[in-house]
Length: 225
Image 1 (tube, one colour):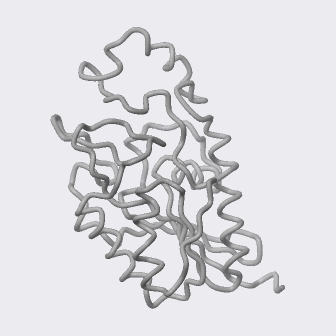
Image 2 (image 1 turned 180 degrees about the vertical axis):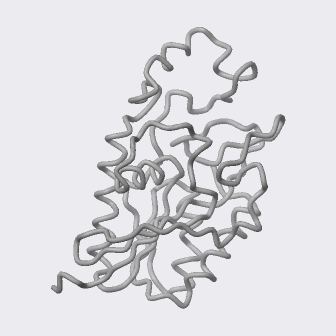
Image 3 (image 1 turned 90 degrees about the horizontal axis):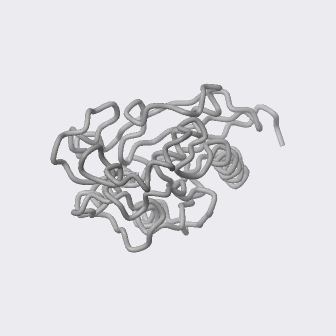
């Protein structure tokens, strides 16, 4: 194996989820792509169809599997599953989450907010980074000299990128550059990451309030994890 062999792993966030109640769905089952989310997935499939992708893998959650399916079909590849790409665990799963209109109104939930640096409400950032880096390296190995697509979720993708770019892991969620159906692409020379790129092939399909850096619109439903 050449130490200069180049491999690119595109870590993709899934498409929009059907979530009319606006709950934080986390790892809960039975949250599927919306019609718009399926269009996003098809758009990504079109954008990578001519690339040298030899490996497609996804989180076990339905929304990730449904996003990966058209990508695998366009490339003629079987979609593999890697549990390390799963969404972060969260104590607020199944609840609405907002100041004055959700789980934060209940004093019993305040204990989960005691340490935003770990964070105390869910899976530690370091644990997310370690498992995501393991999944990234496995995809690199499966696609040596070519490209791979991994479908995951916003928070683990952002934590992985922060880890690779040597930034602190705790952050303001509004600062995440990880829009629905976006690609965070890690290019390796051998086993060494030499560049990180970010693209949004389906940006025109993403509602403005769900785009990277957008402020939450009052009354808007949905959490795009």
